[in-house]
Image (cartoon, rainbow, N blue to C red; front, side):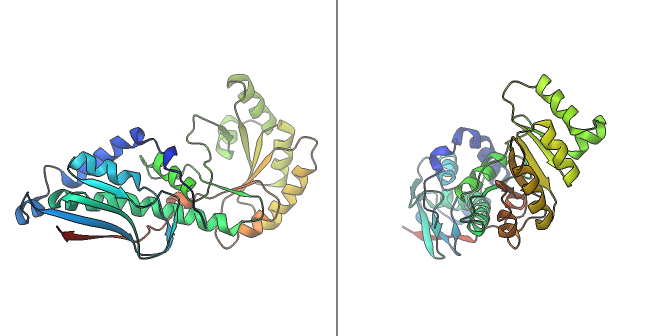
Length: 292
């Protein structure tokens, strides 16, 4: 069971522009239905309830959303992000003007359901490789504009963030080599070391054993074993582990919940899974409201 607080690692200042955009696209110049049906003096109490087992993520956004809609709304979080919850568990209360509560309902649910879905899937992968020493990484395959939040949700599920973007790590892939016509890989790595700041982490993608040998010779910090079968990953790990200087090993491509443990048992250090962020199913979360 994952039971940890990760919310202190969420910088809400980075999220505010996305929340403002979500409010603008949904509420626009006002909630026509609620304003027409309800008295502006009507008060209500709402409860966010998880409908299925999973990992909760995104709770701090509830307060951010409702604060932007109405300062009269009081938000009470019942737990921290990263908690394992059972279906039927209430995770937050909101009280205040009924119109404001209904206006923010879908916006809050969209964030909660998406981020909790990512956290839940990450936790399932982490559980699959438990006891192997392997860590689960995310990728750059994220929803545009949501990367910071989705990678936060991966951490809430017990995963680890890979590079945030193209700016914070070098990853030499097949397309770089093809376009630059660098042969072998050692030339590309050498050029990176000359042009990038000292201490820049250099990762090299390898799709076969020949490229693994080249990556080893290049002195790369990390070798990514891309789209290899579990059997080929095992062979590549054996080659890498026998080297005089052993880089860290990442397996990536075609990895799912069915084969993650088999690949973890080959001796890699990390498994990266794009599906954590591009294919996570939203966690079912509801909003129950009552008049005060």
